[in-house]
Image (cartoon, rainbow, N blue to C red; front, side, top):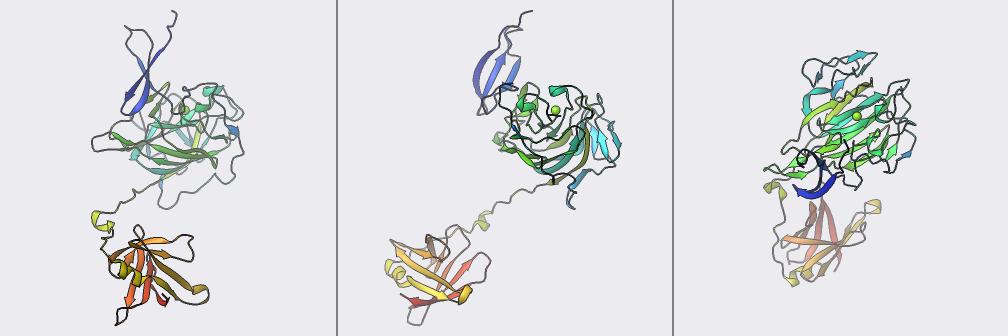
Length: 374
Ligand code: MG
């Protein structure tokens, strides 16, 4: 049978440009839907440039699990894992490592994770066997969805987006930093899970930063979807956690020293904690009265602040900044920085003339500076 050519049509789905490819068979119904790679390269294009070969960093191996880590393999037990087919893991542990049992299927962690820092070490079979994708292939699937490729690409060729260090099918590694087959290699990965709006719409794609053997190979890349051979799986609405998964690609790849750290969510300020300045009106004569130079301390502790009026607000010039900063009044004598926790609290004498100012930034103790000149 002569294959009929693909016909491509560009559609927009969920805000992302998508190329739907029809095989032109089965009543002309589309059978394959692929997400376009963000670079414009088609997946696995052999013409895509190859990354430069660089030296691995010597310090990347053997990083011990920190006390707060979730240890997924300590050299002895695969208790943290289960077979993705159900049942216990049939991969074998020996000499502080474990090996893919070809044909027994992938394994996944019992626990699921969202944002993580992951350390993992792997070694390609030695002596090497096979070529291209058939040479020491396995993979680390973050959230069970996004594959960081494990492959013997030491002096061995394959398409760039399938090399070790690639986000498979989407982002080639920035460098080829692989070690020879049989030698241990290390992945250090920072993963930010996708975020969704309450309605389930994708608000933020996943983000992957990865070091292979201490060399940055993925710099905050955003997968267009989950990994699946010859396509990319669209984001599953609302899914922000998943197991860590190791691939059985029928090659006896070894793994050891696997641990991760769960990453906390950054906590936004509540309405109450925002404490945005409630600005009050201060007249121009009042502002002019506060303008002047204030100073105190001596030697390395000396500090001088110059306050000037510009139009209807005050500027504060600090000695260690090139440009003055605008300060806004929250009371006739208290002026704060709009976005920084700090500012100036002026003091007046019995006649109402400014005599000093208290300068505060963050949690530092206030510095009282005397007015030295108008
Ligand atoms: Mg793989």
